[in-house]
Image 1 (tube, rainbow, N blue to C red):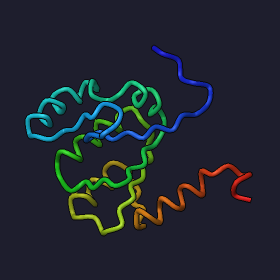
Image 2 (cartoon, rainbow, N blue to C red; image 1 turned 180 degrees about the vertical axis):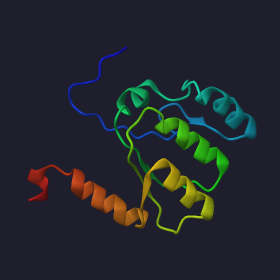
Image 3 (tube, rainbow, N blue to C red; image 1 turned 120 degrees about the horizontal axis):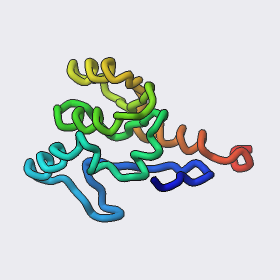
Image 4 (spheres, one colour; image 1 turned 90 degrees about the vertical axis):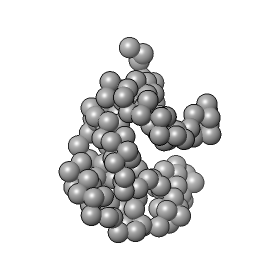
Length: 131
């Protein structure tokens, strides 16, 4: 196993696909089926995410849990991680989302994404810049 860096690393993980670094999108049903058949053994999850999630929580931003595929992905990603997680969901959750949030220990942050992003930037800013 690779050693983790001494300094904490923030990782932005977009499991349903992203433009960077590899333009790896999940577009079709067959893409989802392929990934879901392997996700239980954690293969599609990048090594850095697997290493850093141990004992830590996830913050889900811009992600709804209103379909089974998204919930399945989230369940597998959260394996071997901490007990507490958060999700920025400005709109009230659907019945199934609310059930999923409760089952998985995900605390809803009922805040519009732009407001949350501003608050997050402020919270992460070095003390010298905040003064």
